[in-house]
Length: 336
Ligand SMILES: *Cc1c(COP(=O)(O)O)cnc(C)c1O
Image 1 (tube, rainbow, N blue to C red):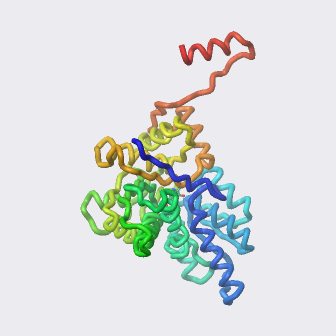
Image 2 (image 1 turned 30 degrees about the horizontal axis):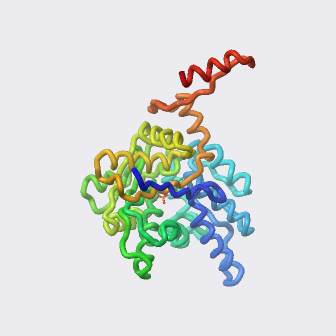
Image 3 (image 1 turned 120 degrees about the vertical axis):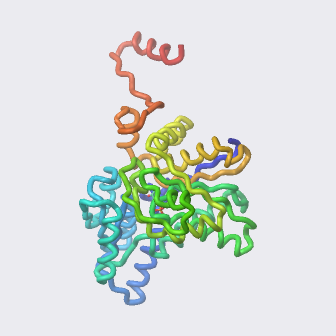
């Protein structure tokens, strides 16, 4: 491919693109509390890890208490430690993301907390800036394709909103084609599109290395279906092995891919193999998190310890005595 770009949205304050929307939400809540008499005990979210890290950081900055509901044992160590470090009340529940979501919605309905999940339009307004930045970085040209790893589907809808706004303002003249990429183990949108359905049927999402998108009942599914239709989009899924291999393949070019970006890259490789994406088309893959948040995934891959994953590109350290001979031999063995 000649014109492939990875937009590094995970190079941000808490290491995921969730910061883009969360800074808007927390800023507006703080303004409403200070100047307009909004009174909330805390801002709360259900999270697969990155949303809670982001909310905890911006909440602490703004001096607003934060409650996060996480599925116990299903987020990476870094994702769990981030909200703890920022002083949030971290509730680890013995359920999945969808179970946490159901509870936090009831907390919000009871008026106990202000809801920070992505059905909140303030989040989507912030996430929309990805579209604006992409177009600006190409001198106001719209790429042919944009590939996004997706779970709750808020960002698919936010991207559409961003690109549609640019076009409505006359800054651009077309929409890119959208690829919504999902893990096969949590692929309700892909299933719906495959079945030719107009609505998404919730499923039970199975554990995946792409834990931030292990979501079976996406709240923004109707908005994402609209985005797909308007952007002549595709929905593609990837197996655990395809995800890990895509991330490892990209790492060998100098990136340090988180598993979600791996999902998007796996979708890209499939679409190139099928010829759906042409060699000369401009493609932007949205990298949604920093690989540094997913050390367990990286270590597991290179130690060949991930279930269902072949680790074809694993690279293990060579342990040697501290003498010259074996070191020379090791270098010669690698490049005979
Ligand atoms: C939240 C998240 C996604 C998916 O975004 P949705 O709006 O839920 O579809 C993808 N990758 C990472 C790393 C995330 O944190």
